[in-house]
Length: 222
Length: 224
Image (cartoon, rainbow over all chains, first blue to last red):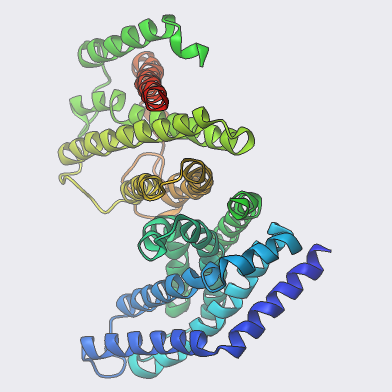
């Protein structure tokens, strides 16, 4: 039952996104222009950026993209339509569907961002598989945390200010872990080295996911 | 709430805090290189974090209770306990900063534990901002309770997992350093340290209880 609802809701979100493509295109343009601004601001030739800076800058861009992309997940639809969903489905399936949908969205944005970023600022990554894993975990972590935060911010009203205030400190452990895993991947370190971080990331994701799953019904009801 | 009106624990708090102040500054401590007399800060700095965690935990439990019961008292309690927790955290940062100056040579060092603590403060300051941004009392209660529980879940890895995983921590017990009790939290320190934790925590609860009672009175006056 729950699975059916979740699948239906994800489908609805994807179709909705596809029909009014301006949101998706808007986010893509956001990533693209941010990357280009960074590139021009540093005013460097290809591959001259310090590796640490390269890595951190990439994740900061992704962080801001995530905040902007996910902030709208509960504002897109009118209150009356949300009330309609309220009568139809479980709140739990809504949060799961939103988290999965946001993960897909973030994954897409991050990968496109990564390609564009490598194009203009160079790519020194030695262990590509692990960097992709870092991207995957990052997309999952960001979307799990920020989906819940965005639901809180949306209920509280002026969410454009609240979203970063509430989200940044909560997301920091995930961001730091992801940056570390990504750094290890760039340096091409032994894969065992980042194993601890990956386990921690997954554990944090699970904790945050479970807490959102338990708490979301209270937010939804109010 | 009856517990708040009893006086035995307030007397205990006063006794323990004075014991900490007098005993902590005058009693014999182990002589260690670099730390020297600053080791006495253990009673004022480390205990702040212990008390803060207990107060924030109480705040989170009250938030869970609020979601179950919808009793506005629980909401007020959660808010005030979090407020006092923030104050203890700021005091912890301040005492830690002084300690860092005299042992590590700078007011603020790039240490994972310090950074985590500062971020923890940001989370709870955000909680305060969230509370003040919602007008409706019931909505405020629900949403801030949810954020409080959510933030606490995020705070635990921040304070207890990340610093331990970091490679370059200066703090004892983190980044591969041995914990305090491994070599120097000997019985001389313990006889002040544990009472100090209880003393500061009780003091925090006392302040919170006074604020909760004031808020209750204000609410009553507004109703009339």
